[in-house]
Image (cartoon, rainbow, N blue to C red; front, side, top):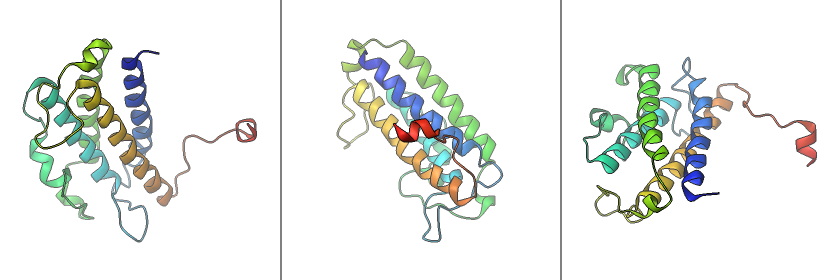
Length: 171
């Protein structure tokens, strides 16, 4: 397997878990439990802002969802007031459009390209020096937050989309 294929696989796995959050359009403010935590609206918005940051890092263009940073970026706190957020489907659609741009870029990469310097690395943040490092960190970041979202799906009474067969359980 080539390194670029591993990155595509990691980004695809995160997208698979995002499909769980897509099922939460009717309950986007569901918390994972009484202790608080991130709800699907915040998770999807946060990942949209992060995906916009990927575009900035790769192309030097402004983050197209810069205006959402106060709602969804580092240091923001999810609120249960739906009026504070754009519509869930808009946020999810924006994330998907930005991810499609990222994937189109990744589809053009070779393994050698992964070692090129990140065109616009974040200031004072280690680990983003190369394109490969940056993409892998974002893939892991997405999967971590998507995992949080799966917990909110359970809290909303949804069953997971992956249910292992008896044969797989016995494996």
